[in-house]
Length: 166
Image (cartoon, rainbow, N blue to C red):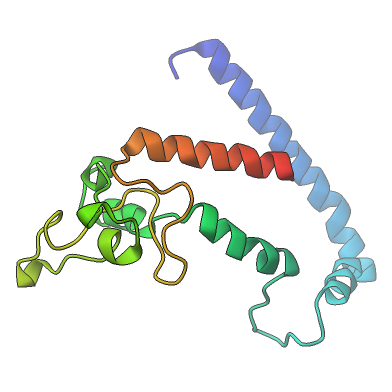
């Protein structure tokens, strides 16, 4: 941030955000201590079938998840491999490669066994930021031969569509 004006605006925005948080706590904390309002509100929202320490999946997630998996499925191995230092950036995942041009889990997203001498493009495929699922197959925005730009555009389109639907 070499631009002083940009730094000043960012600092002003952060200050407003901090003051909002401080005022929210100043109002809600005493209210909770006196009346236990938030405790009773969250108890009313939680179904009786969920006990202490159990994970609860909300109704919106139950409705949206099957549809979302068919549109776009993110490859969680990318961030894991970058964080552990196996790869330096996303370029190691491109171009997307499916064996024999067939777009399904077996031909695109199956893992290579390096110990057995398997090679990407010969014995197994390669996926980028968007991957395929064993159960549902490849999502709508998956394409053989995609590059990083293609996958980024697909993610942006899905983000804009989801924000529009909200």
